[in-house]
Image (cartoon, rainbow, N blue to C red; front, side):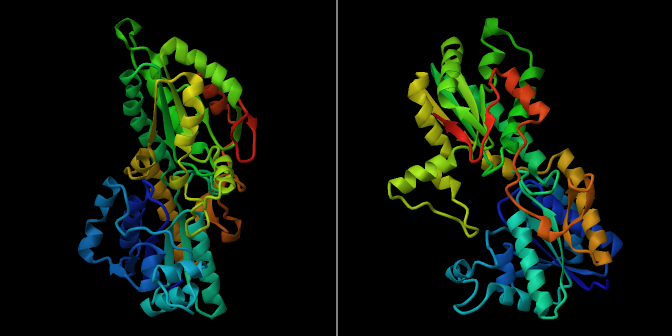
Length: 411
């Protein structure tokens, strides 16, 4: 395929891979096809709709390696869905009567873009698919090669999404500071709320990495350094139903013996119950452009704290969220390797005229390939039957709960 111009965009929430992925794509294109022009749309699909883009100059290409050392996105992000006409009009991205897909298609044609690399989650890449199909219906060719970004690791059928490993590592580091607060008050309840709308992988992996940190330290209970007080005592994920009465009984003993309880909570655990309570009370549940409930307005950590504080006899409760800290971190060593491999393959696909979302396909032997757009889905569940998760729960004395749809704590 003859390519003259490539466009990049990052969209959705932040993840530790975005800056590095942009850098890797720019570096690799400069190495293998230096004559190809590279532009980047600012603020994701918002920039595409308004024609707001930058051109990567020679100087910028020479500095692209610096992007591996930073989090965030050098292009900026937004949550814009190209098929959500009402939201696009409300934001002023298109005028009344215009179709965002038409506007985006015209902009790509006007810019002379041959290949669009989208770096985002399932919503971002499915919007890219809609755009590519729309263009083909109009006899305009556009190759879309996406890269899977999400700290939740919840895109099917991709084994590991970019940014997830770094976010788990950053969340565990965050916990080493926050859990120290257990000594700030007698009978302290700490809830570490971790991002994860419908997938508990990030919460579980963050808890595992934090627990591993606990096992690596030297402890001395005689001088007030007790591993049991610093450890995680409960892990709640959306995929697992938890008997609240049994948990209260178990955790009350921990509180009585150690004077504190620390819980790692996935923000998606229990949100169905919270939403039902709000709607029953006549409250409107706010949603984003993709139709997802805005979890920041639901405050699941505070809801759980309210359920548990009195029953555990806690004198003080604290909810701390590691989400923004985790998702804004730079890519770690494991993610840098994954980013490099995926970006290299994405460019190979582009030059060969192959579209799709690049990832290790769990339904094809875990091979790195361009996965067909129609097979990409969000909401991949975390498998609580994973041996390492069972071992983790056993090590902290928590019984394995039953698999449940829309889980959380249940009476």
